Length: 327
Image (cartoon, rainbow, N blue to C red):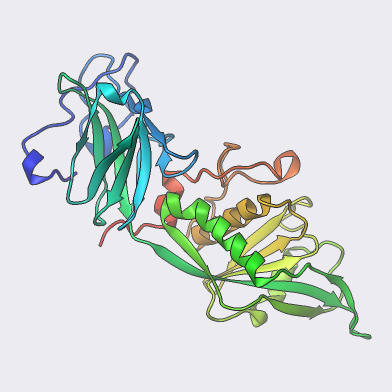
């Protein structure tokens, strides 16, 4: 952990407290030694996201809340009981903090680097709560959309077909995905210019396509895109008949089969979920797929909860899909 030169002589971990047991397996912030204060634990519930499920991860493994700030952009936060505390900035060369008004603050990312932190200091000079901060550079990917149909080999007539979307509809979907991923991980998807391509496959693919459909897709992709989304009439792959979408990695490109008929807005969350699947796979995290919290973006959207909203990404996934917080 780096401190600014003006604060280099201060040990912000010397004394902080909150009634409650301190587990021996609970690390201190950024690997520092946890204070040896009886029944000590930081008041980390002082920090809240300005907008639900965005920017702050309050459920990290270490128990220390974490804030992602895009490089050269800002993230807004709320400090509960702010009149009792002043905010200490460990590295003003990396982030700046502006008080916006009642309880709200804006944190601006000035340079990328190893994570730094903010702390809430009371009138006695005790650091009562820590907020770890990462400034991440933007990570961009191109996405292309396709509309699949199948056909009778003899007559060439279409048997099943997906619903085609206008370019503006596709842009709206991509904007929705970025609204979820950019504030939490500074990951941005750009739509490949032009409308989606219509593709007709020979042969009856069935009333519900299976994972075998992926074998027929590589020859139809736009080579400038990283992530490829194929709309289909129905999907029953991955051994799950009520799945909404499926994603796999082929030659370092992400291939996503995406079912028609997902309710408005839920389709954006489903697409963001599949985009993170692609990114996790591209970074080699094959088994890092789903969480157990319904409010998380990576909760499996199937069965009784297939249309439930969930947008929280969390630090673990953010650090995997965008590790570029150093330069």
